[in-house]
Amino acid sequence: MPVDLVPPLPLRDHHERALARVRERVAADPSAIGLLLAGSIAHGFASEYADVDVLVIVTHDEYTRRAAAGRLAAASADDTDYPGGYVDAKYLDLELLGDIAARGSEPARFAFQDARIVLDDTGELPTRLAAIVRYPSEGVDDRTERFCAQLLAWRWYHTQALDKQSRYLELLSLQKLVLFTCRVVLAENRMLYPFHKWMLRVTESAARRPDELMASIDELLAGPEHEVVDRHVRTVIRFAGHDPDELDRRWG
Image 1 (cartoon, rainbow, N blue to C red):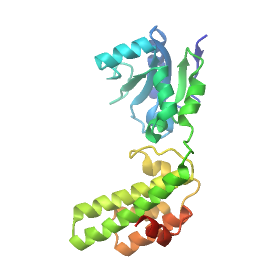
Image 2: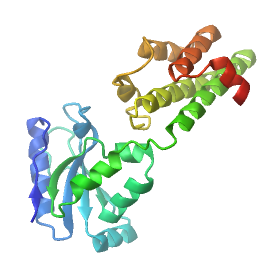
Image 3: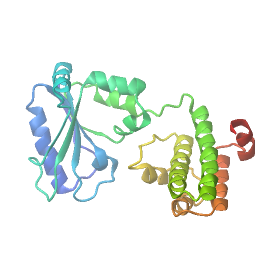
Image 4: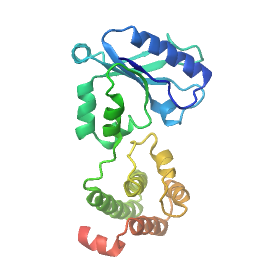
């Protein structure tokens, strides 16, 4: 029996109207067996005029046909009635959901985090979503140590950038330092890494993080003296439970 669920988060009226129209279209399509609201609206990050991101679950045969034709994504303004609005649809099948649950990267998993089930003809989507968004705790200590080692490596590249007066290398090293700072904090909180678009916003929401972390990241991005970079790196590595000098000896 089909399961028809209303998203539990409040939607702006124009987003709700668009989603209702999409749901009507999907419900009338015999090859569609589920509909998820995803993207910035589901995550709670959406601006007033954000597009509506949906994931349409189709039968395996339909997915195979769409994949062969290169039709696994579609964008249309037909179902929206607000300035610049459109619906961005991605098409998946249950087999692909299983693959993501088994082997998906953290950004792939994060794409389903907070996803809202709008329509479910399978009765399986709650269980499958729970498996996808589970944090991959296996090997997390080793991953965190590698992220800390990356902080040490990019700290060294920062010194090289200053010595060689290479603005490119300086900017690259600072960006990498921010990246691996966030990877450490997210891993310590068992939070999925969302890739670059939402990385700082998600990291800021972490319950456990070094004091004044976001201010320190802002300082890094402004291009500080190397002493500031060194202090930041040491703080983050200690936060992860490692001694910076001992880790540097092992990874240097």
